[in-house]
Image 1 (cartoon, protein in one colour):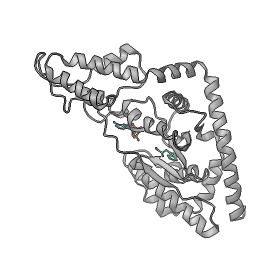
Image 2: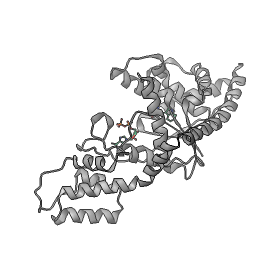
Image 3: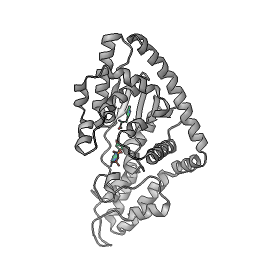
Image 4: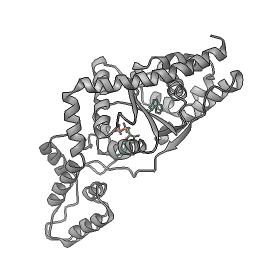
Length: 319
Ligand code: ADP
Ligand code: TRP
């Protein structure tokens, strides 16, 4: 199956992104032909600063490679390096009723949040349709908020196919198995917007400091601790198998250890889990030419597939 997904780069990644989005995506490359790109044309719709957009784009590429995107298995590129997508975007615009775009929740939400409405923001789903359709994508793994965009892609492709012949494959969305919302250091949903995140790549001292800031109840040392609903426990459990979870619960109940011990344990779990990713990351940071090479190879492969599809589409509509 051909699977495609786009990644919006919007700054430092955290443990919530890692378990909620990155790890499940990397797992897909074991079974499927995976195509993944950093959606910088999409990020442009809300970007205000050139150097920040550039930095976020390359940072996201490095982070995903470090977490385990394998360039031997997966085609990985930066969206704007395959400008063919814009040609298809224009062609698809002709098959996109205004009413369809006006119904987009994501657009309405962004405008409601005060982001000024421009044409790029409005037509964002058409570009997303072009990303998907130009590569004959069969499956698109997305978060719930993106399902409507995949449905719109199907609507646009159907309209094209009905009017000019069967050129495009209708993609299916696949919503990843619900990962429970991962809490931040204050117990609320971890998010970079709430300043409660534990970032993926910190040095060891900073990571321990961050873990020490996790809010827990004020049970005095020597008394049994409640592990249910404890943020340190909830975060630690992400890294543990059932047996290890039971062992940690027993430590909570014994009353012999305090939250300080569990914060140290959590730091160690995070530090260990990301050991390999950290090594890869420092390698890539020192070998940026290799990163650019991987992205260029990916762009080349995506371009050659897209090119063929666009020729077919143009032929079909008389361009
Ligand atoms: P943020 O809230 O930090 O801005 P994003 O909205 O950029 O994060 O999230 C990117 C993806 O990471 C989401 O689609 C979601 O799958 C995952 N994710 C983010 N925060 C969490 C969380 N606290 N728990 C689980 N998954 C999360
Ligand atoms: N809009 C998606 C998001 O915000 C990113 C994206 C762009 C995408 N193009 C895509 C996702 C194509 C899947 C397929 O997360």
